[in-house]
Length: 311
Image (cartoon, rainbow, N blue to C red; front, side, top):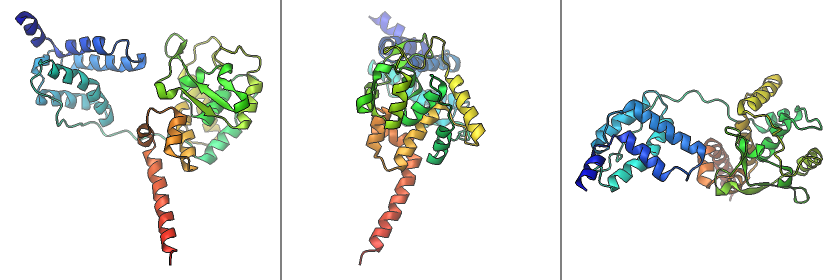
């Protein structure tokens, strides 16, 4: 028993972390999340190749974060810390580390890069959609239209099949995604909240019902056998934006555009969160904080005008 304890006390931290990932995360999280843990592991090997788990103190842990922060922005450093914290706290519970070294840590990082425009306003969106080439055959322009009008994630949109549409009730069921980064097959949605039904306007329903009429019911509409890259669709969208003199956004930016248009139209945060498939309203609030704050400022003006008119 003493020998086993000694072996654990002498274990290098990155080895403990690698073992912890296999025990607690492997097979329990999505592949894309697993890759983030693997990336964190590679940074541990690079930054603290000789640090023993038992030697983790508040100072050594803070130094690890500081070294990581030299080449990363503050938010990325915060994510790195969150990737490590679960394993570190388990080591504390197991008695390998005497005290919690993550307590009162300070997150540093490089100044954030200038943020790109993430979304279009309603007029710009209308300009984009009015100039799409919507022929009677499947194209990336149809994919752009669908994401702009539904707020789907790129992988969700690729996973759409004709049988997912309920044309009589003007709705679309989201219950799977397409593994465009991997082998090209159906996958589960990001989380339970991502399984949802989305209402679609009558014009888009009419267009899509005609478009998919003769397609296989259970096959993805936008996947024709060739591997689809996010960058390919982004390039199509970029060409449209430049041609029309619009800010260049990504295909994911269309999802942000969809949400921002709804929020500015007065749709509640709860409804936007459900439509986007967010796990909670907190995610929506954090993602669109700047829009919410702008709307709150408008609300204050309305409140003041209403109060001042009272006699």
